[in-house]
Length: 150
Image (cartoon, rainbow, N blue to C red):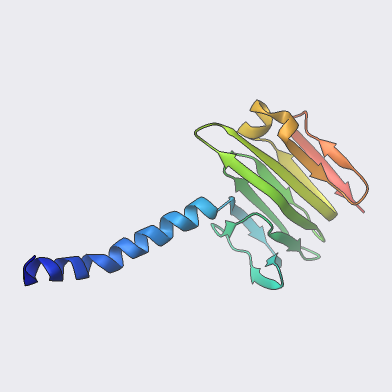
């Protein structure tokens, strides 16, 4: 390999690494914020970040809305979740393989209100979708529902 060819490889290396990181981030992305109003934060372990439109969501993220806040996000399978004020929602388990059209979805509503409009996963495999609250586990059989925890 001559010097000119080597220099081309070195110039392309940062681009290749950037693309690889973007692909990895996309595969880990479970969903995307579509609307954010007021104080909405995303907590993972003990690290909090401010939610913003087009921001990513991952499995195990906890969404916390303030007193006059709300947010809406879309998951990979097309499920749309709206979170009302004073709510805490954990994305307990989110897995969706668009090729096999299989996976599972488990949301844990600790307090507040959510509205869910289900996507492909609930339509194809309703038994694999559930919403948990501190006192119950709800199996999803419909396409549009509201869950409230006082």
